[in-house]
Length: 111
Length: 112
Image (spheres, each protein chain N blue to C red):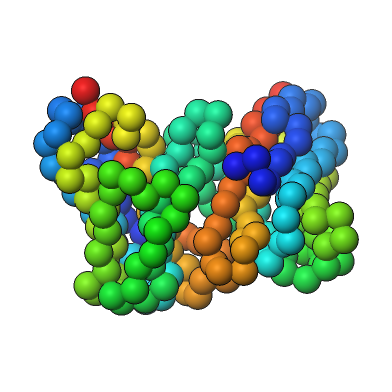
């Protein structure tokens, strides 16, 4: 959805490098969710952010929510080939539990 | 194992032949939803359900029907499929509407 823009659209990094993916909303965020998808498969829930300034971590992945900018960033530290896939952000932008998703960021990690 | 199960995984059908994609979850989740995923368009919500007998339209409901007679099941019905409904479909559930989803493995539908 154009209401939820992800950048970059694709990313190729060398193993061990850090990287950041951004998700920006054109509307107020009532909840921001990060997922990972292997090509053609279902999405795996990573984490949920609901309050401005909130930051969560799962293994080497950290996500932050900047409520003022209506933006979330996903940061991967010391990337590994297992991090490869499509990262999608999802959000409730109406407060009515109707979720939209960004078009995703394709990440490739070179060994 | 906690999961969302969709069937079938792959389906090729002809225009106009009614079909149902089943979705079942074993986590006693209140909230369920259907999405379709298309290249360049991302995931778009078709229908969602806040609880049994409560369903509502998402962004792209035309050509689809759903029902929620039991908490665990949320089938997607295509009464008269058309080629523009060729897509990858996902069912998802969550404990409550503002929690993260558990997704099914997807159903790849081709309508010829």
